[in-house]
Image (cartoon, rainbow, N blue to C red):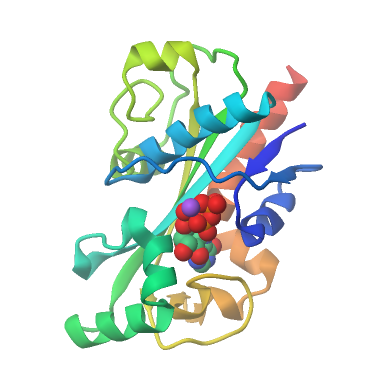
Amino acid sequence: MLRYVTTNSGKVREAREYLDGVEQLDYDYTEVQASELGPIAAHGAREAYRHAGEPVVVDDSGLFVDGFDGFPGPYTAYVEHTLGIETVQRLAASELDAPQRAAFRCVLAYCDGDAFAATPDPVDRADRSAAAAAGAEDADGDGNDPAADDALPVKLFYGSVRGRLVEPRGDGGFGYDPIFEHDGRTLAEMSPAEKNAVSHRGRALAKFAEWFQNRSAG
Ligand code: ITT
Ligand code: NA
């Protein structure tokens, strides 16, 4: 049984479109302090796997505002709970020239206690730049040293979507969706399927699901 480790049921709803029978594991893993999402997700996946004893996937996501040097990034959830999304949007509008460009990024970290092939999978250029943006330098791109990787390997999958911050519109989705506009519509104005087709999480899930299904079949 694959467990999607998150306290956020909105993430799980989106994951179900890609992963048959995935179950939410409502487990609040330790979020290590890091400037990028990859090491946070990898650390969380190891901890969640040790806790659950079953295959786990951890989803760490964040909003990176170009004009704020990537802030709030790893602090996106904290900033949502403290300032709120409308304040984030107003701050961006008052401090930055239009359009207030930003990216949403998602890193999925999978751990099942097994080792993966030592050679990293071939990655396309978009993957490589997403991996670099997520702070990946070592073989599996999780920001940990190789000895730790050998002990409990984690495989990472990246997705990102570009857009701009706008006054809130729409009532779908969750989190920052009402203020994140992509291609003329906010993520909250899209149906779940439309959001998945363009979103950071949908892109990461598509890559993970393809790999996971081949792995299960092989
Ligand atoms: P878990 O850590 O338990 O998974 P969380 O919601 O705290 O739940 P993160 O730590 O990854 O998740 O924080 C992500 C932040 O980004 C949080 O404020 C979310 O609401 C927001 N977020 C993540 N995915 C999003 C999406 O698809 N659309 C809008 N906001 C999103
Ligand atoms: Na979190």
